[in-house]
Image (cartoon, rainbow, N blue to C red):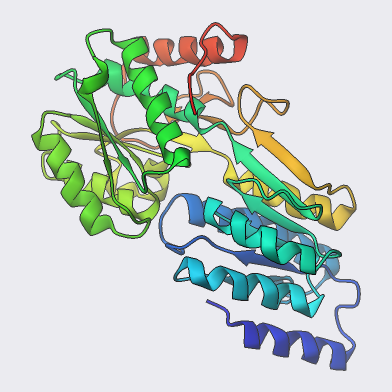
Length: 350
């Protein structure tokens, strides 16, 4: 983690040396849980890093001169980081990751009206904040379809990070997708457990084992670093217990578990972070709410990675999973994706 003090020293030195005049600067404040989740936070970092590398090449400066990031250990850290970055006046845009940064940002952003902020996964109703949200229930529904068709027990599960509206929408989509694909699955057959943290894979494994032992043979993880525990649990009964990842193809990001991950929901956080940074640099950035998803103005941002070939890009695309998924399941997933796009499938959510 780069410390703010070092960032400020770098800014001062650049000024003294007469370097980097007009060079954009990016600040990224990650969600609690930090890097290493192979999913939400890591994906956010990848999007910012992609923008930073392109800008570093464009301006002929090191990436480190453009890109700074911090990994808060608790929600209490958010305000300090938001203010310290904003106070310098050096950053073209400050990107805040995670729903729990929004309430803090609503207090901080008005104090720095000329500073552009972005918050990912929540809405902060402030004139200098762009709020990016996703139709999470869409990726979850598609994951539910795969789970519903793959299960041998007609019982599946989901591991959530916290019992909050954001994660309950994942559960709602997953449950509806499983039951749409497999009418033998009843609402009570879709188990759910909440870890209460985004960075506790040990407890994630414990809760996953509980669901597997209760009869679920496929579990969908939506818990940040905590749902790495789903994969570890599935490995204990390989070939009988299966897992589904989220936000990024986790057979790619956690290849050691590609033998038990049958699919992964896709949530293009990296694309959202990259796009908002580049809009700020290029002068096209605007505050307000931006929605990513199949049923949105953008029509991009959610989908699923499953199978060996792209079946309906960008919504149903190939995965790095080592598990062979039969064509009849892939065809049903494509049918579901088209139904969501066309409005013949309406996913109920909070």
